[in-house]
Image (cartoon, rainbow over all chains, first blue to last red; front, side, top):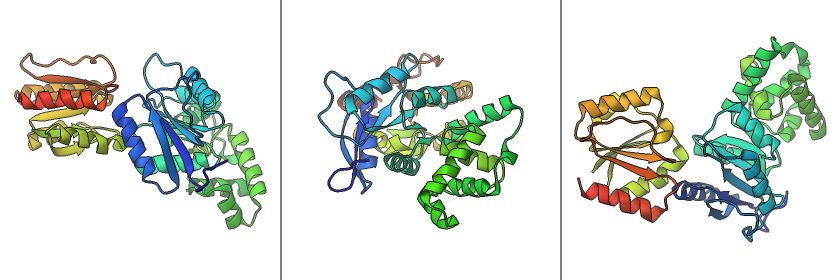
Length: 214
Length: 116
């Protein structure tokens, strides 16, 4: 993804609560690889902020909110910027709605500061991120509805890849560890997600924990 | 005013504490969950809490605190209208809207602290 000339990820914050917006700005601005461009309480595509953000942290809350609509407005306003949703909702169906609407990450607002920074870095690096608690709920539902666990479907190599994903390694790092090219690792990851019928690496982490792989 | 803070969102705590201190509060404890016995032990004058923590258990805990600490003041940081919270009529409750601007929050808190 494109970055500012100083190689920092340019971040814009959309947060209705002024105080929370300030907190997010302070936290993210303290990270040397981030540049916080500003914040707004909400986005209005008719008067988009004149900034070239790489990533938008979008707060979505409230009982009557239309998640898909808000994400679409954000996409309209910020073009190709990646969208990281922050929400107080830990419900998998809301996470799925957000991801389907184009969100690249879904995080609960009670996430720790270090976890938020890790998630933003992951998303800025082109990957997706889902709060493991939400991913876990979703996976549990799927496993229960399938009536079985899918562990025996993975090959030995795929099991190794899942274990390394759970340790927080990127595809590139997994490749180095297993003497594989990054592209091969990517193929393994795609097959794993497909076999487990899940859509995000975070869900694979939950799977690995549940299956005792880590 | 000795203030006990219950705020589940760690990210938010620094700017919240800054606001409270600016308003004249002296922070005696910051917790992510409401522990009523710890509140009793700490004996604050003001209990500040985010309504994100509000569930049936928390409501019962608050009722216990209001019953056992009649002079305890409550400040609720809420998204919208107050959720169901029964308190004694003598209990002083301040309701702060999360969407309010910094100056408005500061003003309301400052007045609440001054009238103690």
